[in-house]
Picture 1 (tube, rainbow, N blue to C red):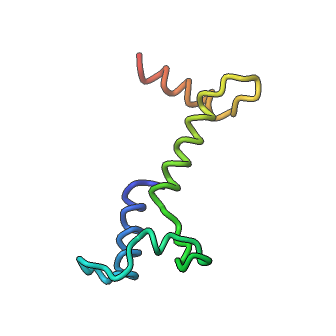
Picture 2: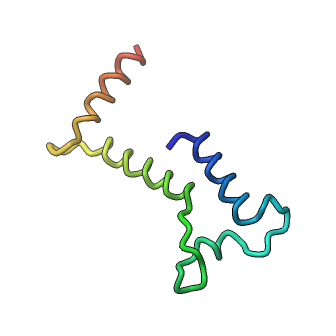
Picture 3: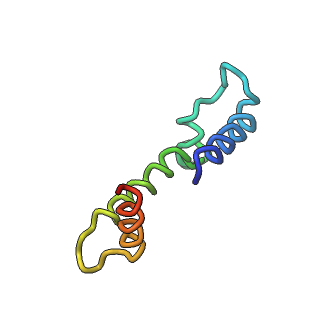
Length: 83
């Protein structure tokens, strides 16, 4: 997801849980903890987006015969714009 969307979502989450207070009653780690541990199981958006980017990088760097089609398009675009 684009960084500006991620930032807006994080701001809305902060407003919902902490009402923009500088000293929240519950920390982010507790809210992201599993329900069984007393948390809300809230998704860590930054970690999720980073994991998606790492997965894309792994796919791009896979030079096996099963390489994803989009990686060839990316190669062509990169080669075209680097010249």
